[in-house]
Length: 291
Image (cartoon, rainbow, N blue to C red):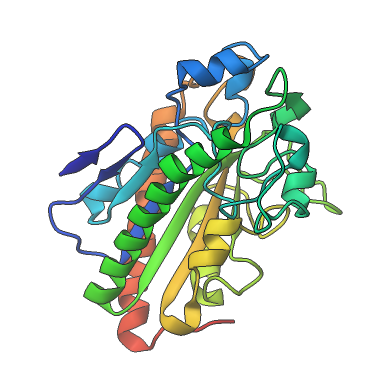
């Protein structure tokens, strides 16, 4: 079953048989005309912040027994992997409400809830926006998306007694691990052991490496708001962020899929099955524990 709205889509399994929820919050590629009219960027440049086709790479989730939630709206329009009101006062023609967080590192970098830039520090807008534009996107996109994600996680937790959220992302091909020069194919983020058990993170790294990939943990991406907010290992709720190196599957200049795209998607299907088997076997012995 598929629940498809203008904002997002949930691809449901016939029966949810594994305690997983897959989430692709940054692969949306439906750009509102009004948003494009406000932007100074061309149609290709505005897409630089997308997690290109990550929803397709993890499309095996429903067949394996887990729901897959994916955004249709683009990250450049509103970023659901932020607090609801991480807003940059320099972007708006009106003062921010007192509850806005304008001091976060993400806001300083231009990547708040309403981003100021896309990747490579390209300014999105021609001028300042009315604050009402931001509030409409937060109320109309951000809040419904998180309400849906919360329902999927709560349903999973109720059905199985615990749950695992896999938050699916991509990263630029030029990313290196500081101090080592390693160019990872995957980064597994668990907020340094606070959003998921060490056993779960280590299993993910092991499975990816056995599939022939270079995988590292937490550096330089340990997980964003979604991983931090929903991962509660002490309550049996685990959240992992998976970052995929885009150069594995697209031409980063043209954003066209590489010939190896389907092979990578197949490898991720194997990885997802391995994770499901691990959780089933491990949870049968003892609960997954926080680090």
